[in-house]
Length: 444
Figure 1 (cartoon, rainbow, N blue to C red):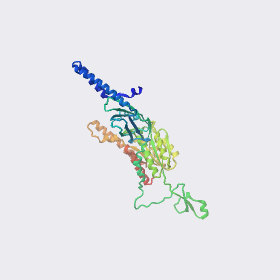
Figure 2: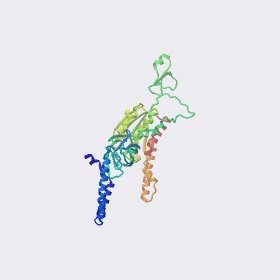
Figure 3: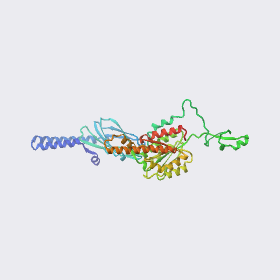
Figure 4: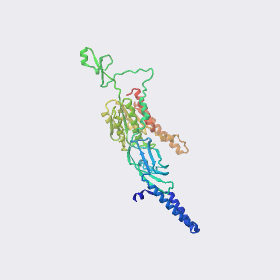
């Protein structure tokens, strides 16, 4: 009886019928014939409702639902969720499904209405677009089933509760990985030349010729041959590339409900995959007050998993980013010349000037690429029509801030620092293109 009480609901059609019968009873006080009609109608309604309840509860598993979830969610992308609903009743059923979505989506009225014939199975697809990393808890699936009479409704609580992790956008890797297979250094009429490098991978001993590095002289071979001999090493083709993510206050601005920090996280995962496919070494670190989440640049099978887990755990402390500690740790821990891709954001020249000395120091020993963001909302203000004096003021101020961004690019260029000024939604593609350009030019 307890299960019956918890799962039995009366349909709205039942209450409409009760209201209609009540009206007939009122009319029956003035016209006696309607009084008898209303009593018969009430009796019929009671019998039909009892029959409806009996039919609904005669099958304990009249409706079944299976929810198919991915192993993990991809942040900022549409993740496909599948529901498979089967009607095991021997009659047409009207079914309403209410999904208990994770609280992050703030949807409490996410439902579907279906009509299923006997033994029919239907599949429903819907997309969820998470906008932050973390744990997403899926609750039960509440199903309300009714017979063609639609006087009573039976509630089913189906589906298993499940917790999914939302990782940085791994779905976009497929869209960008094709870039790793394009080699812009190969073209018709161009010959590849093997350059002599300074890696530790020994190739051969050869006679010294003018211009060779005297630091590689092999004194034992020189003594045996009575002429200068040097060690020749294979060129080191795998270059270290570090993605450095600023997780301070400057990266907490949101565009399309996704923070700049998460845009940078998604871009780091995508470009790391491209870096490894281009036979370079991918690494990363994040910083605010201090440096954290350090993954040493390597080229190994497990590198993408290490980077993905480190990116998943990145959290902001909303503090002012300390570029001095970034410089100190990079100088101490990254000893080989590397490409440093720094994801940060500068809104004004004053903001850049406070950190410029540290950026210049980083650029002395490494190739520094600063990636920062256009304010797309300012562009919409500039492009909108001005209907009042206030609109004109807003447009002028927006143009001033946009001009500041261009000044920042020129200031970085003046000191030999590469930069990418991009819209948040184009961050990944623009950063990958810049990396491929720098690599093809042999700048690192």
